[in-house]
Image (cartoon, rainbow, N blue to C red; front, side):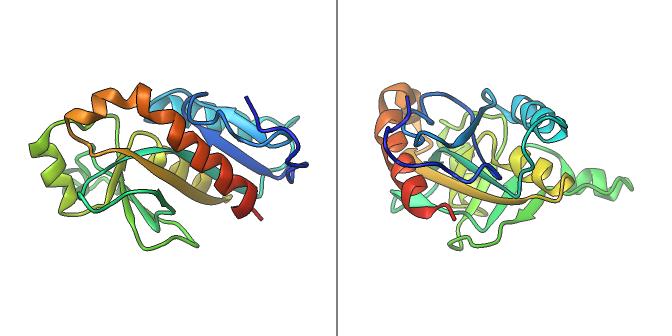
Length: 192
């Protein structure tokens, strides 16, 4: 469900969201891709879109979605400057001679760090471990950054805190609508 009357968006901007719930307030006229939840689904869907010769050329990918806060003081909307893939053994694989990128710098960010992986973080021990290196956690950001880099397309990540990456995370379905409203509002004001 898009917000009517927001005008046409530049067709070279692709809005990417894991779920329709998170994209509920994407303005009408925007190019929107719903990928499904998790790194594999996001990678496959975005790769198909960017490789499709009949699709409009893409100059900017804007990944919108919710995130868990890894620190109690984090709330609201963030534009991460760095995304790291937290659930791959990158250091071990590099030590064995397999070069692996697990960190992407995102231009135009606010200085925050997003940890991204297929693990739904609701455990306080895991939250504490991730909080040593990141501010937020999600499940698709690193996949979007990876594919954008592979296709040499600019990327932005826009995340709204929906929960504290703790037991409250299991209430995500009831929390997503407020986050989706903030994301829709940012798209109206923030995409150039």
